[in-house]
Length: 292
Ligand SMILES: Nc1ncnc2c1ncn2[C@@H]1O[C@H](COP(=O)(O)OP(=O)(O)OP(=O)(O)O)[C@@H](O)[C@H]1O
Image 1 (spheres, rainbow, N blue to C red):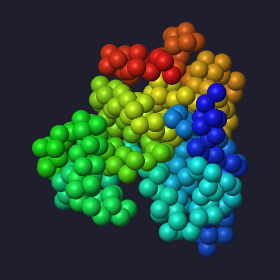
Image 2 (cartoon, rainbow, N blue to C red; image 1 turned 30 degrees about the vertical axis):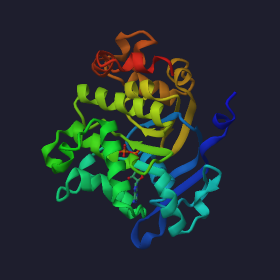
Image 3 (cartoon, protein in one colour; image 1 turned 90 degrees about the horizontal axis):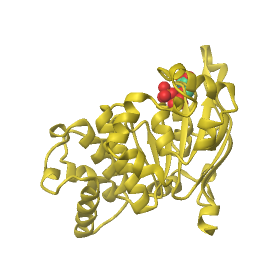
Image 4 (tube, protein in one colour; image 1 turned 180 degrees about the vertical axis):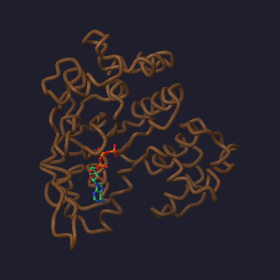
C-alpha cells in the first residue's frame, strides 16, 4: 500500500458549530454535531445532503472562514483550529475553494489574466515573469487561451467562467480544493465538461477534493467516498459504491428514493438522475471515471 495514501490529508473530528439566535442572542442553534471524516490525498469525498444540512458550514470551517465551537480540523498533520489568522492565511494557499456561482470570485472590472494572477500577488509571488508563466500554464490547463484571457469575464459563457474560477483556485498549486456545488448552476451538457475537467485535473495534479454536492448522480460519479449529512450530522459514510448500492441508513434511502423516477428503476440505477447521467455518459464521463 502507498504510505502517502494511508495518511489522510484532511481529518475532521467531532466538529461542532452553533449560531446565536433570538432576542439578545440568548439561544444558540446547533448547526454541526460531532462531524467527523477523513479525506486521503488524491481522492474525492462527496458531502451530500439536503439544503440546510450543514455542508457549506462544514466547508467554511475547513476553509477557516468561520470558527468551530469545538473539534479538530487537521490538514497535512497541522491542527488548523489552533492557527493564528496570519498562519491560517498562509495555509490557505494550499486550500482553495470553487463556488457554485463563478461570478462571485470574478470581479467584472478585471481581465481574466488579471483575475487569475491576483492570488499570486496576494500570496507574495514577486516576479512578474513567474506570475505570467503560471497564469498561462493554468489557463491552458482549463482550456482558455492567452488571447481570450485579455477579455473580461462577461465575454464568457457560464461554463467558461467556471473554468476561469477553477484556474484562479489552482494557480497557487493547492493540495486541497473545496468544491461547493461547482456545476449545479450549469446546463447539463456543460456540467459534464466541467466535471471531466475536474477529474482530469485531479489525475494530473494529484488534487484532493472535498466535493459538496446535492445531485446524487454527480456525487456517485465523482467521489471515492461519500458522507451523507442530515441536520448537522454525518449519518452514513463509506466508499461511494457501498453507500449508494448497500445503503444502510433510512435517511440515505429516503434521499435516493427522492431522486425523480427512482421507483421505476432497479437498485443499481437508483442513484442516477437520468438526464444528468445520459449527458455525463455522452461526454465520456462515465468511462473516464470507471477506473476509480
Ligand atoms: N451565519 C449564519 N448564521 C446563522 N445561521 C446560519 C449561518 N450560516 C448558516 N446557517 C444555518 O445553518 C444551517 C446549515 O446551513 P448550510 O449552508 O451549512 O447548509 P447546506 O447543507 O450547505 O445547505 P445549502 O445546500 O442550502 O447551502 C442552515 O439552517 C442555515 O440557515
